[in-house]
Image (cartoon, rainbow, N blue to C red; front, top):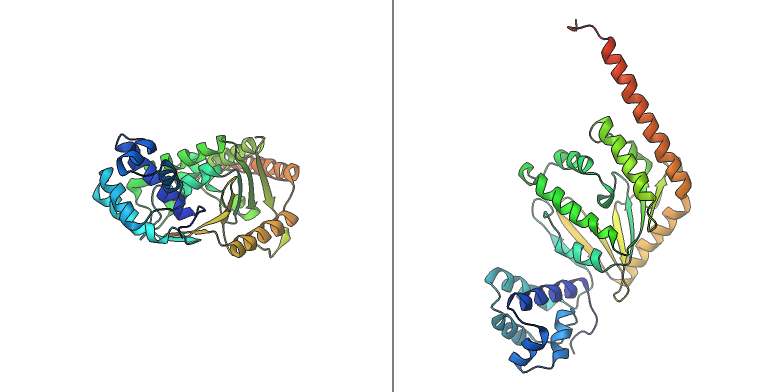
Length: 297
């Protein structure tokens, strides 16, 4: 029997099929009429719930005149729609845009993100993000502007009805990324974002010592209609973990981080103090440079 609930693979398959139907100038009802199907069958297909065979998929792709690269992608994706979890290998570096990540972020209602080394992507300023990308050993310099545009597109999803909690380690905000001005602007941006009704930013202090999040960054997404998933990225791959016990493991990590992190007010005060220290350091540096003889000895 075909699977009747949606996985990350299934949802991406469904969205791509929906787009193919639209590009063909048809609605789901019109496609059903062309193929002699019930409209409910097309609905299951475009909602990532399966309900069709490989032969029926080939008929749909032909009816919609799907071009060869997309056709091959869908045919390769189709046999694995029922599998929970999806590891994507990207070659040298992650793609400029992740359609899988974007579609899941757009559908989610709750987001919990942990980052031990840097400001989370969704909270980065353009200058801070550019400095991080420029430091990468794998991201081509020619892609920097396009990657920044893609980041802004993802950040726009925060304006949806998405409840967000971001856990950030103190060391991530102490790390020098860009100039003093870039650091100060990034902290000011974090404080503005923390004032949004649906966004919580919690700092994990270095004094907490060893902690449950030392394995690395992740983002936990929960949905109104789908099972939750965890998105984990590396230098050149992405993992979307959906298996129940795997998600429960990350939920336990979140609970442990919550117990040792500063609360919202404490985190805001920490960021404010850090911002003041950076500004004072920049002023001291400027005064020091003015006192140096010119030309230098």
